[in-house]
Length: 139
Image 1: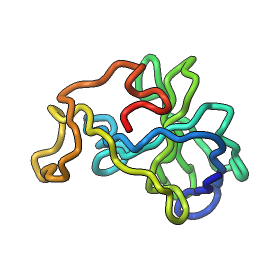
Image 2 (image 1 turned 90 degrees about the vertical axis):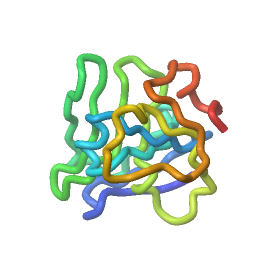
Image 3 (image 1 turned 180 degrees about the vertical axis):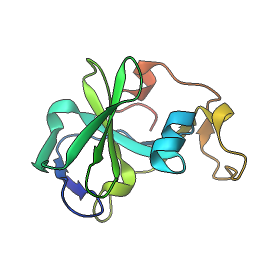
Image 4 (image 1 turned 90 degrees about the horizontal axis):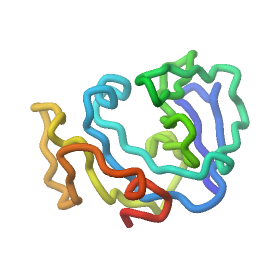
């Protein structure tokens, strides 16, 4: 079990069950909502337990997905696709050591021109299929 929260603590959560390795998403929407690129793990939807959720807000960022954030401090916390069995969770919102590693960068064709990727991690210029994003894949 891992815990996490937003910057102000108004949204706090626990993650139970296996976690997917971290994926970095460089798409325009992820960059705009996170301020850089979105780095996230994922857990089965039922494995996300909200401990404090009074300030949790949701933004419909596409026809098929939405992003969870703290309405008090603005922290970007969650991403979910309608009907998916899992939810993505911001790696930076997790408390303490996670034991996770970054397995892939996606939508690198959209990445900003102000940074590079010299980490040796696999890259995909576009998106990846849902089976690659599934729990346990990409490790």
